[in-house]
Length: 138
Image (tube, rainbow, N blue to C red):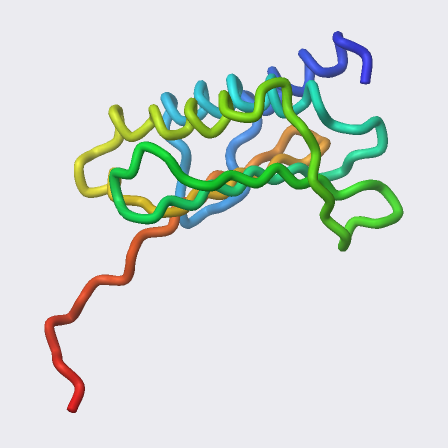
């Protein structure tokens, strides 16, 4: 993908509101997404239609975890395959840094999924551990 198109896509991602209505991205998260997108786009194949970054943490507040970078290509949109961003660690670390600016109640996520569409739309969703209701089952 030519460099100018990559830059335009990264800028477009900032201008388009997130497509997940349940969790709206803050201005800071949108800036973080721009930084992550710049690195992701560097490793995407020419025929990509959707890219995903999935971060999984063992526990809330963990500083390390697992990350997957997946891409769907034109004519095979239901088949995800791995790809290599500009730096394997940078996008995930950048996303982990967002916790510092999140409200305390939102910092305890154990999973994050960033989905980027070719048209620049994106969704960033977090997963939280299930709350213990305190009820014991007998």
